[in-house]
Length: 267
Image (cartoon, rainbow, N blue to C red; front, side):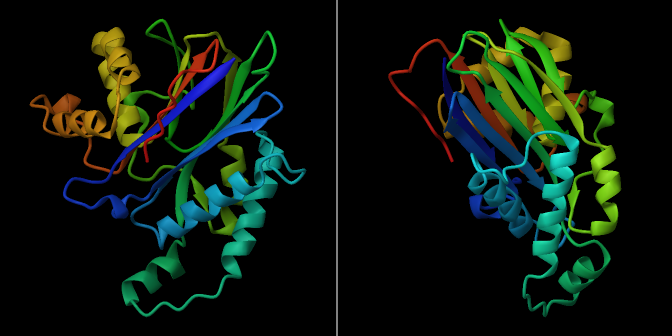
C-alpha cells in the first residue's frame, strides 16, 4: 500500500504563520513503515516553539536507528528523559522577567501524538499510536470513526492538559498517563491527527453529522480551504459549535492501494 500525507495549519486569529506553536513531522521511513509526530506547544510555557522543535527533530532524526523511540511507555519514558536532560543542559540567556518566571516555575510543555504505519509492503498493514495529552488521532473508514487515541469526549479537553514536560520531576506522571491504540488498515482509510481545538470541534461536529465532517476534512484540497474552514467555524453563530481561537493543526494520512499520481504536501 501507499500513503498520501498532508499537513494543514493555521495560527490564532490575527497572528502570523510564524507565530504557530504546533509541530507536525513524518513520512515513510522504509521497510514498509511510516512514522509521524504531532505536537502542540503550550502558549503559557517558556519557549514552547523550541521545545516542540527539539521533540520533533529528535523523533525525526532517530527514524530507523536503534535509538529511535518505540511507541511503548518504557521506550517513550527513556526518550523523554534524554530530551529533558538535553533541555536542562542547553545554554540560554533570559533577560525578559516574564520569560524568566515561566522558565523557573514551569519550564516548557507540549502535548504529543506519535503514530506508526506498519506492514505497508505486506497484506495486513496496521497502525499503532501513543498519546500524551489532548492531541488526538482518528481512524476513519467509509466516513465513520473506527478508533481514536486518546479516547476522549468534548468535555475532556481542559486548559491544563498533561503533556511532555521539561520538568524531570513529572516523568513518572507523564509515563502513567500515556495512552495507546491501534488497528488494521484498508485502502481508502484515513488517519486524522488533530491538535486540541480542532479535535474538540471534530468530536462536537460528528455528534451532529459524522459523514459531513469526514467528507469535508477528506476533501480539503489546499491551505486556503483549511483557512476558510477554520475562519468560518471560529465565527460559528452557535456557541456550542465554535472552534476555539487557538493554533490548529490537522495532519491527514490517506491509505491508498497504489501510488497516487500527485502528492500534495502543505506546510
